[in-house]
Image (cartoon, rainbow, N blue to C red):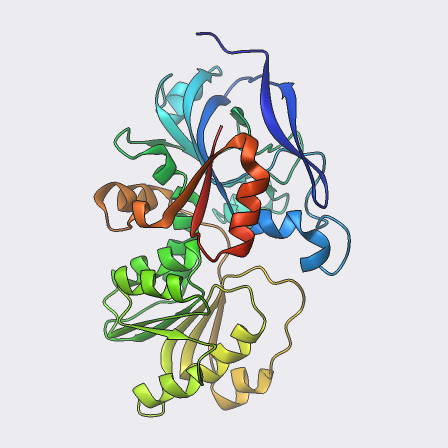
Length: 359
């Protein structure tokens, strides 16, 4: 069967203005790859973008998103066409499953030239940049010539392989925490990425791994996936519980993956002196904290975590060998046509962990 001329795709036109349209199948040039999308995830950032006015404090799509654009940056697909040189460059063949890292680096800016490509100044992330990096909520998708692509083993189910991107982000965040053997580690937020962080952090040999959330079902899943202790932050004083467990010192590492402002202050209070705070979330707006805690009181290490640089091969291996349980995380599979339902399920979050769309 040949490649069609047109395809179904979701197109972002504005806040709550997402439309299923018939658009041209991307054409590829030298060094480029065309995939048939097999599965694509609904990320918290997709939900925030859709509900822009509720989350970002205005009735505008966030300024780093160029519309109209096809959304989606968590995906896997089957290679259906390869531009000149792409097969040799990426070790791909038609029929392979493949994934592309979420950022398409420019390879010209100071960060790219230093190997820090995830901080590329141009910052073309799939699903946010029209024409240059169109996303995966479509039947077909183009990997530009500058992209970083990886072959995915055929024995990983596509709906699990769609977790490679969020898992790579989780691995990077855990690595930024510099967890030492025996550390007390707290991960706040048991969404899909937080649950991935939990399973990855377990590999670091912490003395105690504590999961925080507001949703009982997600805390129950966290316990199944390796948390030594789960705390519902709506039930009592979570900070005091951690202090009581650590002779009043506090945890060694705190990873913030909730996207909720109060979780930042909570982490600063919960950490011991000389502890490490990892900020992963995208927040709705500025979050105010007492900076004297960071400096004068505790001399904390504050680390950001952005994307999943150099982590894709390990993410693929973790899903393949079961270190990370893909089946436990993918709770909903919907056809692309039901993207609006998928966004609402992910937005509510009560019955879901990861929602995956199947084009």
